[in-house]
Length: 179
Image (cartoon, rainbow, N blue to C red; front, side):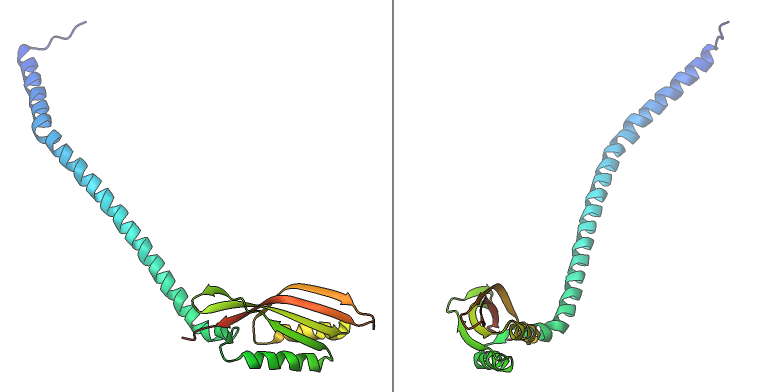
């Protein structure tokens, strides 16, 4: 069964569809390109703002980290030997060896390695002679000294008179500029 529309209705529908197509062609499509460009611009701006936010957050974190570290800077600086305190280091090491009845030969190397613009690394070679117990006490006290000494190698040999000869190789760290 076919439904027949009167021509009048058919003409109405054709005019309506044509009007909708014309509105679509003349009003929606030109604005669609504008809407698409606006969308792309907003997306780019959102990405820019997000990266600025992340950078600002990183800057804020860096600032907080700096403030936290700068409060602890005097503690860290005390770990380094300052220029002019060479005699204090040698005196402390000699007193430590005397305290534990060890004979000691000290040799600070002449080669320096620059860690950064304010810190240099200087090698050392200590030769100690004495008993094992006294050496352990010496190492414990050496660890508790306010200076940062890094021991890289310990070589222990027994001498003919039943004592130990201990070679300590390592590094001292010197603060070249105090800010």
